[in-house]
Image 1 (cartoon, one colour):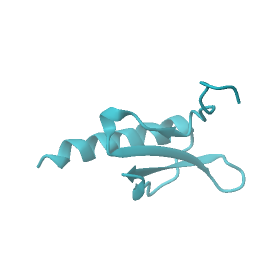
Image 2 (cartoon, helix red, strand yellow; image 1 turned 120 degrees about the vertical axis):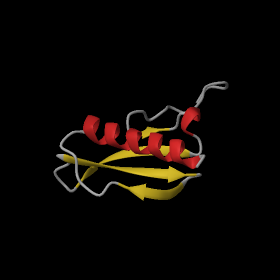
Image 3 (cartoon, one colour; image 1 turned 120 degrees about the horizontal axis):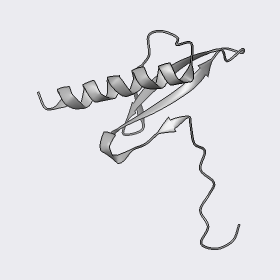
Image 4 (cartoon, helix red, strand yellow; image 1 turned 90 degrees about the vertical axis):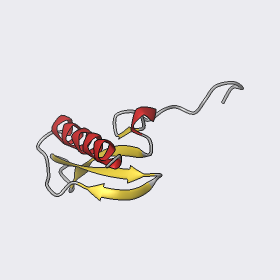
Length: 78
């Protein structure tokens, strides 16, 4: 790899925005068919919470995971 070039980024499966620190979201297919998706929330890199159901699309799983991170951040100050 040429100097000054970073490693290629593997987008789409994880979300590591600094505005959600210390939480990160991972969306992954379930089972061999990969037709359903689940999310996992990590806090400082360690598993914090997992979805309790399977979602029909990656977008739905991501949306539910992002909503849960927003709730965790909002409730953190209480």
